[in-house]
Image (cartoon, rainbow, N blue to C red; front, side, top):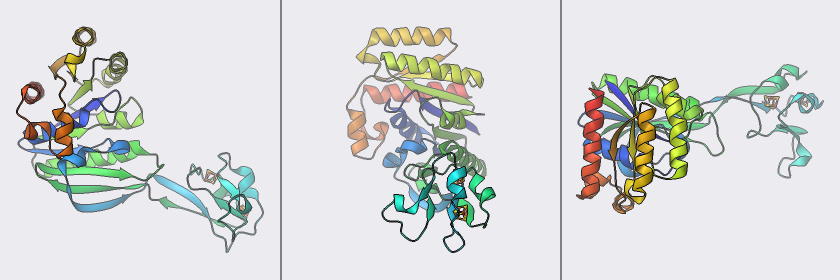
Length: 296
Ligand code: SF4
Ligand code: SF4
């Protein structure tokens, strides 16, 4: 089983549209949406959820009002400003102190210092992850709670589960919609993968983002291919990006032209290769062939 990760320097480059098209073209694959901060592969693949599991990215402190004296020690020791006096917040009236769950970093210092053992330190639920059926095969995806972090940990979990399912199902390929950028979630998306496909656009920011992503995949020694989306909006810059990519050892797997069919297909909840039979669809099919040949 091979693992292909599709990433981009930033969101909105067409990464998910290309992943959805690959899902439609693949014969025996499992899919994972690791773009957990802005998951939208489900909009096209329309998963029917079979299993939902809570995700806990860490622990958080919570004061037990029945045991708290209140001495104020926790307020004094919290470096993150997460402990509040109750009269600071209108709706909290029955506690002398409480902990703001958004600001709490889970460092446990207040728990250690509380003389009354009045602070619980339990797993907090940061989101959920799902195993689903789609019209193309099994998909693992996730939803992070509002203002929740730890997405790197959730990405690792989604990938691990998807890999196990792919192995169980004897799938030939695991196709992963990776996180954008170069931070912790994208590192969690790509480590140990067989191939990374970077989707970029011929803009100056696209060129800059590509350089950063190329450096990242080079550090992890992962074979990296490039797809220039909307290549015809600036052919000169597309050529320049291709030359730069070559110097960095990146191979260009395909160029895709601009087409409003991408948006139309998305509105119809279809991948472009299911929706349209134009030049752009042919270009995606060529890209798919080049990628799968390179994975052999
Ligand atoms: S340190 Fe413990 S007892 Fe003191 S205010 Fe905080 S929770 Fe209450
Ligand atoms: S666990 Fe750490 S961050 Fe959270 S309230 Fe206690 S001291 Fe503050």
